[in-house]
View 1 (cartoon, helix red, strand yellow):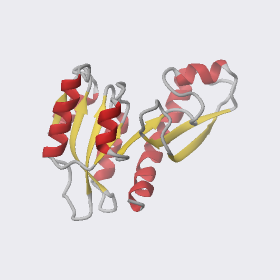
View 2 (cartoon, one colour):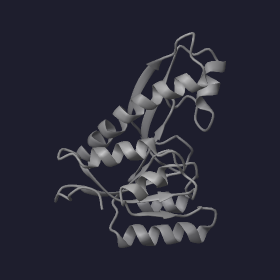
View 3 (cartoon, helix red, strand yellow):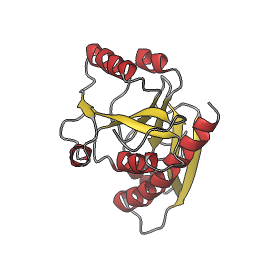
Length: 193
């Protein structure tokens, strides 16, 4: 359990697949008095995800599912229901959730994507942005729907691309902004629900 649960805080699960830097950021954010969320569970689709070390060190409840089979999603839904989770934050989660799963969570799944959607949906965004000589990129927090990176946009942050940038440097620049944007987007989204 993370932080103290206030009456008004929304029970949240974070889904990860990798380093978990957005996850760590959201967990820190959840501990603030002004935060509208309370992180009660982290799910990883990758048993070797670097983020798991942070979870172990900080004694945060986590589970691992590979999300390859329908029964994995059903097990996850049961756990979420049992824990009374009302919001899912995808944070570098590299699996595509089924339409059924998304439907059952009814507009309460958010994702952060490293581009200015609707541009550059999917993977390898920074490589594609650089290849196309874009002047700007950025990040987007959006509601997850059944189409990849196509849900309603909550907030975006634009990042200027310099001539010296490569996919790696751009990724670092954008990640810094993601850490600022995700908490802001959560506050905005939850103030309306």
